[in-house]
Image (cartoon, rainbow, N blue to C red; front, top):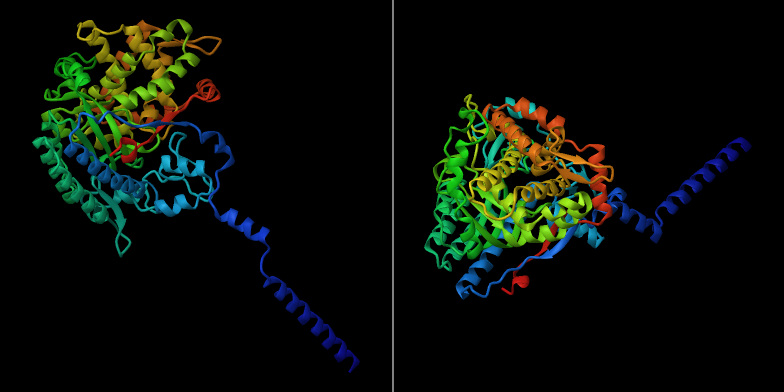
Length: 562
């Protein structure tokens, strides 16, 4: 009995202890514990990105609207409304989480703004590195493909339209890959945008522009953009313009097939446009003179292309993500390009903002004193403009029946095309100076400004097509002695050697494109698309000097007084 009593006493003690423990666990958590748990659940900036939050300089995006009619101002207001939908659509394409809840979950104002600029938790100007806690690496295919899809699965699947520009890849009920057209995948946003464009057309004084808006609305609903691209090429006299829809393929880093939604709302600068009109007519002549074998320049670029200057008053979607575009060359459709050429739009106010805020301070930090005066807005504007014009040169279709260059080079197509445009743009400047067509500035001015521009663009990182192109070119120029670096870490351009490097790199790029040489381009990007330790240290000096990497905009109807 004593033994049993002892056991019962011990059992009671254990039960009492357990009950007490359970009761303690059920007690309300302390405020400190609750705060700690909440902080862990709330997205936090990773410590190594503290220095990145100020890499963008905010610029107010405005323009003189005093010469516009009441109808034209109403038109601009509607185009901004349509652009905002493009902005939301691009967020969906870039990031799986909904925009408003994700941004609302970030407590720090500066971190939230940084996420807004980057359209998600990845630093677009630092190789798409994750900068917020609790987030995964950015998928190379963004949201265009299922997250669990491999390249092998995609390439082995027989699927109509799987390389299409205007569809996403999804899994059906059986788990198999299938294509879904943009007009279906984003039907609500597409239909709302189309309705706004049709309404905007009723306020357009220019009949060709009104027609384009209606056709673009139809394109959005049908995923057939070519007719509206031709209509866009027909416009010559419209003082207002809009570039809107799924356009560039840079966001698809898996294959470079899928287009991303974006928009620019633009006002033409008539006086500047008149100055530029003469250059486009030289494209066929310059094509014949390219420093490459005849078969790589046998295509004849359209001579109906035009070249104009604009003030941009609104950016949205892909064009607004990370680094800001300062010039446009469209359409991308190869058939339209060969029949009609392209339109080159120079975004003058955005270009000036970048030059004053970034280019001049870079020159003062990294260029030898005696060449700094060669870094000019004339050179910056011309290099940027001829970059866009040069997209029309070269070759669009491979010579060995691999289809278009874009299709053959896949995810590397955009980077190589940007590299081509940069290098052929410089080639064009040199040729037109020799012909007396360009009468402003000297060759040293354009070359030195271009060199300072490389430092500006290399800071965009490896995830950007422009950034990859700049790194390849920097390393190529260095190998060929196009520039030198002194003991103080200052750079000097060698005019003669840069001229030779421009010609040889032009030949290399055009040959790779014409041959559809995917392996060759892959090797070039992997070998040369890297930042050396020396260059990284020099770029760090720009950071120490608090020179912005890029600009961001305070924009919208209130800013414009609409």
